[in-house]
Length: 376
Image 1: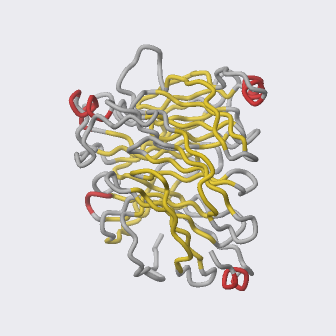
Image 2: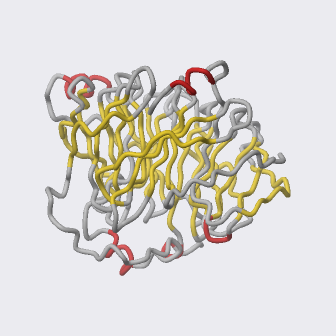
């Protein structure tokens, strides 16, 4: 469970907030986050032997507080979310070099209106009372974008400010997102949910939404027939709520916690979420029996040995979990027990200034000459 520092980039990059590794090329995309200035999408070449990053290019993300990047199935387009102004941009990708070629379209759920809340207002993610919730939900705030794994043509965008999942038809040829309805991110009538991320199960037609403000995971069933109708031009819901579960113990105050990341383990057997305030990782077991397939129950909860676990990630083997404890300047390593779903502390901890994202990369071998010749 030990980690060895291989290299440190000295490039001047402001507040990198999210990373995405190209599935066939040694290119790492990273976005920067600022609520006052437009974010950047920075591309890096990854040395397959040393892991060293070499900056290739930087383009404007076209919005503020850029926080999420998704590549479409053919790696022809990049979908980017800007949290603060809530815009979702579609960028082209060069099929040979993987370069970001330019902005193709933008969707703005706020239709150009200014945000009601000041952009310089600091958010303490361990404070989640009614006042904090009201301020964070005064405006739309897109937080992520993913494409359905079946067709790759339905885009889902959790809107933390509006308590809903926006649904789009994604036209990869035109590079355009067409609005196709919304779905509440939790039980009907509930408020202050704050959907942050959404992840699909690798096998079951289900997805999991982490509601940041209510400290809950909502489980949705994916409607394949409904998705086909959306692709044909209809506006019909493609997600149906089947379960909502709490991420923190019942006795812990909800106004002292917000959720961070959610991920589905590569085995499909577990869903994990991070809790900021409770400072823990909760592991849910994914049920496989008929009638309960894909539903969740708590398997374990583990303190992260640090404050404010904004993000975490498994290594390529799925046996080691690395946590980013943002407010204690620590990255920690846990061993994951695939039989029980328990996280075991390894006593391995590393000082990293304000870590907010972990990206596990397995470089593609034999691409060094290609990357050296690419001019991004």
